[in-house]
Amino acid sequence: MVSWLMPFALLPKTYTFFFFDSFAQIAVAVFTLYILTKVYLQPKLLTSILPETTTLRIWGVFVVVQLGLMAYQSLILGESKQVYGLLHGLVAFIQMVLVIWIAYTVQKMAIQTFDDAVKFAKAAGISLLVYLVVIVLPQIGFIFGISGFSHIINPIAHLFERHWLDRNFYDNGSYVTTLWRVNGLEPEASFLALLLGLSFGPFLIMLAQEPLKRFKAHKWLFWLAWLIILVIVGVLFMAKTTTGFLMIGLLALAYWVSAPNKQKIWLASAGIIVLVAIGVAYEAVPTINGLLNQWLFQKSGTDNRLGGTIGLLGAWLHHPLLGVGYGFEGHYIVQNLPEWSKNNAEYLDVYKNQAYPILNDVLGWLARFGLVFVLVGFWLLLGLMQRAVRTLKRLRQSESAHVMFYRVTIKAFIAMVILTIITAGITPANSTSWPMLLMFFFYWRVVHLAEDELDDEGIN
Image 1 (spheres, rainbow, N blue to C red):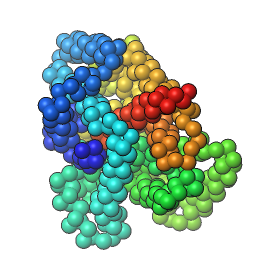
Image 2: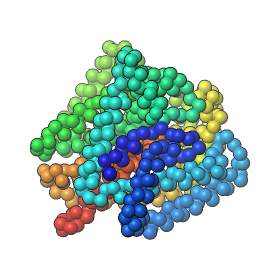
Image 3: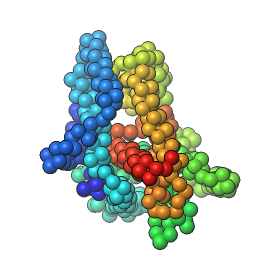
Image 4: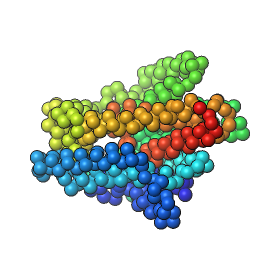
């Protein structure tokens, strides 16, 4: 059963805009049905999937405080198009909590053994390959002028592509046929970059970093990992988004930081050569020049992102400890927006008429939930990271596939967390998407499995 989790997670279409986005996707129904069926068939599982008492108490306090803040803000602000409102905010917040719990529960039920973890990793890899070939490749073909691919792209988009409300990104039937930018099934190109870079990138990078000799009879896996990495880099360029360039840079940095010291010198040299080559291409190739100027060096339309970040900072600084409550940050963002950030079409046509979106996740967490709960969350995450590092140190430098899988997966977990936090400090990281949550709790389960195995073997 573990093999079909990721395929459903990769279908992000939302079927209502009232619900929290991940709660309005097909995955929530499938995963909930799986949990209920498992509990019905194996009632004893119910006690094993409950979090620890301390974790439950923290979550309980967090939910109560958020509900109190939402009720208070609703009384203070009343009805406003800049906030979710009490009912919408309450429903969306509870659904966000449920989405996290469902992802946690599904992975705890599904991944019970080492073999289960391997099956999930294989299924995730196969799902990514199918996604790239069936969804992304036709989009690239369309961009290169094969217009007939639109007959494949648009029907798939109609069934599975996620759309933003009241946007003209999809007027020609899909995002790619309208804007000529690769997006997979995501609502825009930057979300595809986040999916590839954060959900799948860390595992591929750490797999490719293993010495070739350790793959023994499975050397094809090493070369396949590199092939997929190169394809992903190409897709991130074709997405034509600043987030794509950010993902390329962060993944390259993660590979360099985690490489052995002997490799770092020649990797740095190779990096310099690549940068020089890009510089030459920037000067000599008009297409590369236009791409980098439009989406990196001379990117336009940054007023809302920068202004929204400043607005979020102001919202948090005025409510530093507990935040303003889920869904009520929009009012305070607008209050703290610089005037220069309001003189653009996107603000006047979209953001002025709805709840202002969070365009920087770290500041968004602080504005919504306050410093107290963000620090508690980071404290819990830090504890898991420390366990992962200790477990990684306990794993012997073995060439066995068993130990190599644990080593690659735990290193990928550490990389994913760090890259997600860095990304969230710059832009939305989509950290509550189903692929991100499934991968996070997959890594969490692997850390537990590796710990238990080492304890059973008496390895300190």
